[in-house]
Length: 139
Image (cartoon, rainbow, N blue to C red; front, side, top):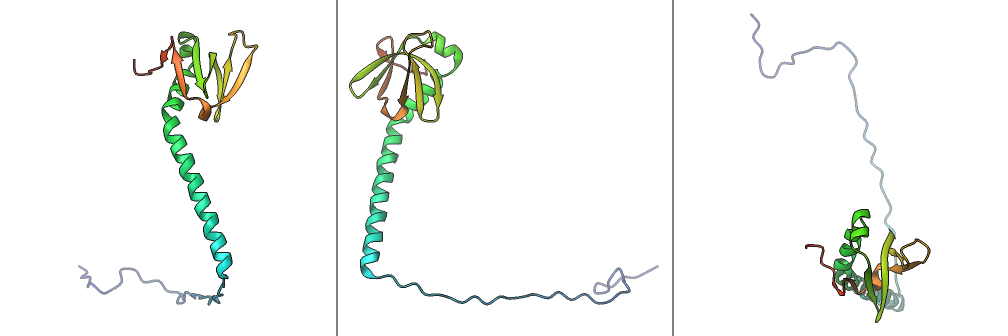
């Protein structure tokens, strides 16, 4: 019967000792000095970018419902069922069916014969009408 004490190793390997060498690299710090005028110009650029981002975010928030409707109507079966659709953009109404969607562009077939196609940005579409009423995908 063997008695094993807590601090005794369970396995003895006869071999050379192993050492691990850790190399620490010392980095030099470099200071960057910016003149006040350059700092002000950079701040103005950052403010303009944040304003543009806010404009884009509000645009996206308002058009999310329209994008959902268009993506919902892009299904082949729904394209045939919900015809003709009316797309309201900047006071103008375009009547047709969704042909395809490429990123943020919607291709609208005006004649139904795949001959007259119009490319419209999703962001410019204000409302999607079906039978003269705003389309609601929940019904």
